[in-house]
Image 1 (cartoon, helix red, strand yellow):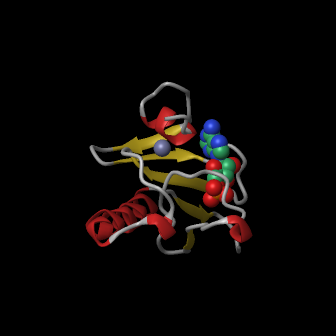
Image 2 (tube, rainbow, N blue to C red; image 1 turned 120 degrees about the horizontal axis):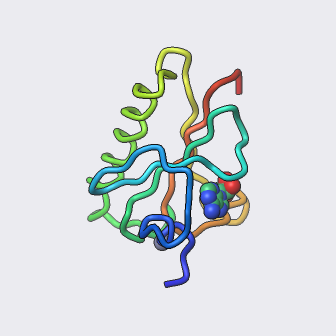
Length: 108
Ligand code: AMP
Ligand code: ZN
């Protein structure tokens, strides 16, 4: 499948990777909208939120908890951060692979 985030997950194209585990990969957004702008993706290809099913409930929960863990590890938990899912055209969604934005580092 011609998916840029799958290619990043498979290390076929480079990205500035912060951390990864079996399920998720965390890398810096190439066009940051805040001093800290990370993208958190599941390594398997899933579509955006509006394509998900009940069976994806556990993965979605884990994705949000991964964001929380990353925020703690990079030291922004106390000052705060914003988690964003863009869904569909009106949200400006560009990439069709489920991803969570983590923005931090200034008053957003
Ligand atoms: P979205 O609008 O939610 O689909 O956001 C996709 C995000 O992925 C945008 O913020 C892009 O800047 C970012 N992005 C696109 N290509 C890359 C890439 N190769 N490496 C890192 N981030 C990327
Ligand atoms: Zn993908």
